[in-house]
Length: 536
Picture 1 (cartoon, rainbow, N blue to C red):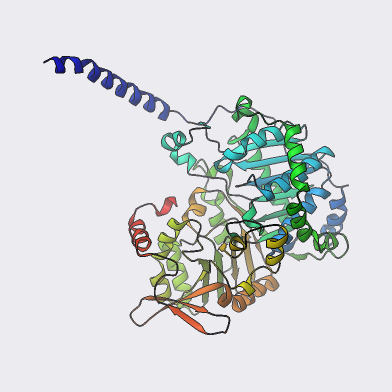
Picture 2: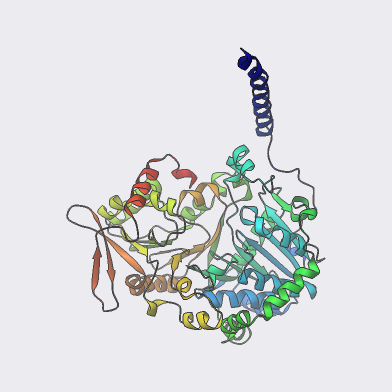
């Protein structure tokens, strides 16, 4: 009796606490977890006159020569891709508008931020828009940067609970699961870069863990103008919050002057200087821009998601995938798809099968299990493989560790001079998003051929109506697929084999999925049964 009577108060306390907790959660879940937005004046890129800048003096005569067209230059090499960014930051005189999904606190992130500070010091207005999903480790740095009179930083689709982000995921998962995946880089309203590369070590051949194989395209002319308009849409959207509004300065001691000093010291480190020497050694970008500029000029279409897609309010016409299908011509001979994450869904698989069965060569290059940095995506891709192969769709899976002779030509130098792990330099993951049709059209952008890019994230890309580029992509795949990828083949029992050519040109046949343990195979199979494909 004594025990029962003494426990009653504790039972009541537990009951009351449980009730209060439920009430608290229900109260919160009934409201948006977004913080209250503060009204800011609308800012438009073209309000800043840039027609007298050095970049304008290079670009404008070309635009007059090729009205209504787009000039492009594809950046395949990671060192050239970084060189282009550093060059454009250093040449900018009026404005830099930068939009990224990831900007890391690492060697590449620091190099770019230091260049941005130097630009801001000489009067360049910098607008940096970063998705908040990966900004937690950077928010103190962003807050310090934002103290510069010429630097404005916004975080897109922010978490309200800055230190307990899981709360947002519990209370507002539908919103939090949608992210701004766009990558765009705009200098003086004259030159734009878009593609798959974020500002992080692994995109520029300097990561100790693995390197992303990716592609960007530099654009001038009509398409560049559309990218600028797209940046303005996101910058002025009510999901773009000033970092000052979100981040409490009392939580961070870093101030602008200290950050600037740290970045200057970072730049002077021997390994950083050695890497920069490799990046800028040939001066190829500078010479190309100032002396022998040779953009290919074509008609082009920018395809992009509206910011309202994050809110699940975008019309069909405002979705990139709808625009992509609208502007792509019906293929008659070949379709080449390169996508880091490839989950075609049933509708996409049917389209590819129909094309292949009509005699069109359909080739898809995506990551192997070992090369995929998001293994769960592999589970949903894998369930389509047998059916696609049985219907003449050719599948290739990117090698996690290509042969040494097929690595970047600067690998040895980077390892020795920049002190980057050779193990990391020899591991690769495909990150490019590219498609070529009929040796006529090429798509390059941030859009993966998967449900996340199609329905959840916002993306941007460009369709270039360029037969020479399409032929080059097609030929490059012809030559290089055997060097960098497994070819998937069905045997007589309709089981998948992985064919790989060794340096001697001999074909090795693997009957089990490379790099996958039995328990991983079981986990992949179980995962593929879950009703979450549209959320991946």
